Image (cartoon, rainbow, N blue to C red):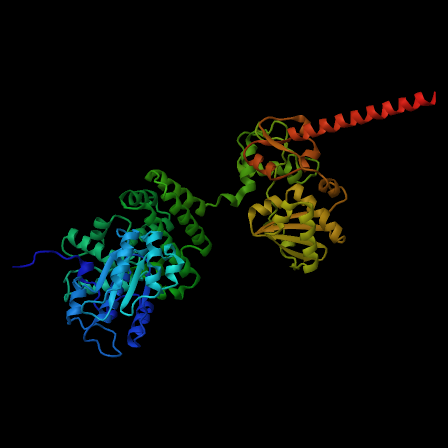
Length: 625
């Protein structure tokens, strides 16, 4: 009678020899060497991700140990003796496979311990294969300690787990630990191609379709064979990329590479295509993982074009990388990688697909048009419409007005906005854009800037740390350079540059530099092609007065207060001022309740002391009389 039972591909093509195990060369070499030298251990711990060959290797080790025809110095089982056939069919009484997840109690561990002392029936070794061993209870592990430490000569334990850290150290120390790893995509692709060829399943398959299955298997051969079987059942004839997408969901590597090319070329449909992919895929997180992989390959190719041939990619991907790796600079690609990482975390929150696509579109827009690139211009443009007697001013006109609305020859960065400034920003100095000396004045850019003396640089750091910790943190981002009697702070971060050149930190830096380098006459701030020049003048705000300002509590206020529109308040520029300014508010200095209570208690104490002194004086006067 014909056997009509269907056998799954991953069972049908399970390796029956060590040479057939794919992608685990290190683990196989250790086992083969032990077999050839007849130095196998009494306990092994196989660890690694799912579907990487742990149980298969355990069965092959059991077959090799109990093979009746295995020659000396040989390691492969013969596959024809009674023991090999019985182990292959799962009928051997001397090879016991135990599922640790369902047999995890202490009673079952004690039963195993009692049976282990019995001699094998018709084999050389009695072998226990415990799969998912980390699922055993602590009591069950404790029950196995003694038998695993000193088992009979004919007993071998092979433990398999995906989470070795959950196996107690007392068990791990009694085993030879052999780690298994994820199988690389090329090895999985080779195995899938072999199964589809004419000698096996005789199925026509496009290479790119098999590459896609190999990528989605995530390093597991069993997963890859299960996916292949699923695609075979759903495909009509030849296996192609369309049939893979139909069976496994949208978001294949070729489809995402096509989308990536649309995005690089600023195609108007890139958002809609992204949304459609997210809606049709089985896991949005996998889509962002694939986009990260594409961006990573492009970034590596942009840094080293000769690395493309060494990457684990198909011919189609290789062609894509060669055509597109020059489209973006490495800096932009790094921003894209960070955006993809953030979206991976967001995709785990089970958000609406439309919201998820919109969030990623916002991330992409920030890459193309960085919001911090024109921070000063944006701030001024926001405040300009109600500041300068012209409600229709453009951003560039607003900046020009900010630079010229004060006729007292003050720099724009020190000009105080009028009291009715948009009814949102109060008591703040309008920050004008830094002078771009590369475009308007080549003097500073043309200086032969040299590194500052190490000793002086350390003294500046130390003084900044003592005077103001925020200034110290800002200077950590800067490179110190000098030319003649001039000092340059070259920043990498635009925000640190914008903050450091504000009045508060600029004056503090002046005080520190004057005390350590009296001959210094000017301070320059630089970030990329932006330069800001600050000359040390006698009428500058006294640095000593600023350095002695004691911090007070600050609250964000939505209204103007004329009492705080003073130079002293304006000089107290902190991060709270900057945040309030950008949020359309202001910082108002107030005394905290604790400070008021302390002041009242001090006043009461002074009154009591004065009263005691007065009473004592009266008593002395009475004594004199």
